[in-house]
Length: 479
Image 1 (cartoon, one colour):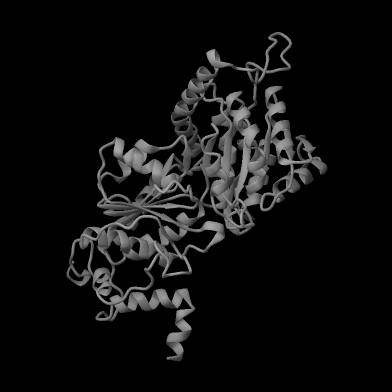
Image 2 (cartoon, helix red, strand yellow):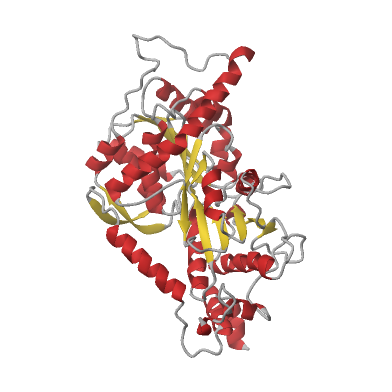
């Protein structure tokens, strides 16, 4: 009893006991043919993949350190900023680079986030390459200015370290800040890892400054989970970064004496709608530009990116769609279940604006059921931001498969491999037993008796047989 009680508080031990329970008649671990096939394919892909022309360096950095290094390597013209947790380190590190004479960026200390975005808008309109950084309430304080930056078609970059919006007061991660600004006209890209956050910033200006786009971009990554946790990453040399990003030579800007212009003029009824239509065109064009920039970046670094990332989706029957750092835990769950022949996969939404609806539908078309995980509530009663938009895209495409929208990680609540595994079980039961989908479960909610709370925990009873079976309904020992 003592060991059982101890295991209840040990997620790793719980996971091992669950695997032992579903594998009780086997003296050794069964090697899944799907696992072997996938690993061989990955080896071949790695052997034939692009190595990259840049000089690479292995390092250990937090996400904030990695993005600060990317800022240093790009060396933008102007950075106004006001500190707010967990993005405070970014202006702190960049200002240190400036004080040490390592870059010549003009740093502007301001009295608020509203002023920070205002100064960035002014610098960008004047023809400078500008950026700022913020989180949570800082982004909310910029609200008015976000729409101005987008409608003025200014290609500035905002490093958004995701943190939940008050209230109640909370300094940890969810996506309520960026999702609240999803309709402001900004491009949005999300990072799973510190290295991806580094890469995303380097690619950002190439996208925003493209003449077919000319829209600002939020480079988003999860507060504390990504911003402060240290990971092994691979950086590239500064010369390669600067050649890739290039010089910024705007066609129209306020300080161009040969072409006088106004920025942000009053637009009444005969003109306002046309500005929105043009913003929409820029957002639509951004899809192709993002893919082109990613392809060029792959040649530089060997790292492949796109609007979405498909993980083990080749033959997946059950899929989780997710954004940000939680993709890592989900990949671990996919790998564990694949070892037992269960056809699961994951799609990481890397670019949320423009929304990759067509790409997601194409990736999900052969699935039997799908879980969509949101790290922000929209309180619409019809799902979270990712859930409602993906379901709309599936409906428009005529893709009618069972789809369940879950909420996870709000206010920094942990999201574990075990919970990801249980979500797969939940959507698998919809297909195997004809269970009616229950929408909008809160993953990890403490009150299990509350309506719409998640009731699933460790496998037990008939569920042992579920995991012992392969995706084709055969025991792995019989495959």
